[in-house]
Amino acid sequence: QVQLVESGGGLVQAGGSLRLSCAASGRTFSRYAMGWFRQAPGKEREFVGGINWSGSSIYYADSVKGRFIISRDNAANTVYLQMNSLKPEDTAVYYCAVETRPIVPVDPVDYDYWGQGTKVTVSS
Image 1 (cartoon, rainbow, N blue to C red):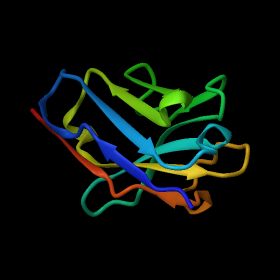
Image 2: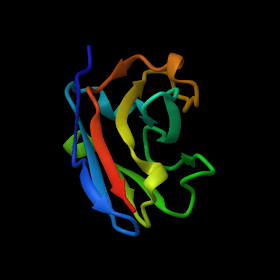
Image 3: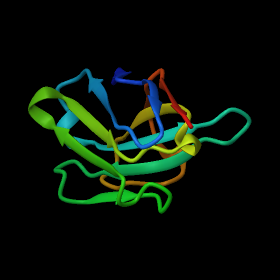
Image 4: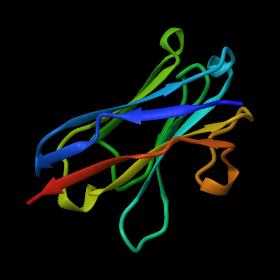
């Protein structure tokens, strides 16, 4: 069992930055791939990016590539999502998720554990 807690969301103006954190419980965190997803009102949950267990492979959705950075600190059982140059269309609830297999899928149904989400609102 893995528990995830996201933090760092809030209200920011367009062009600003936020850093989201996802703290995980469990001693095996360092074995897992992690994904970040977001869900805007009335829309499906979408893949933002993901990172493999070591941090050596990182993937991003085209919509955030060049603006968002994913990293992890296995000693702290935490994964981060640095969001820069934010746009109003980035407004959503952001979730982190654990994939216990050594892959980084883009489909949310493939993930095993989820956090409760943190809300990000970007004003224009």
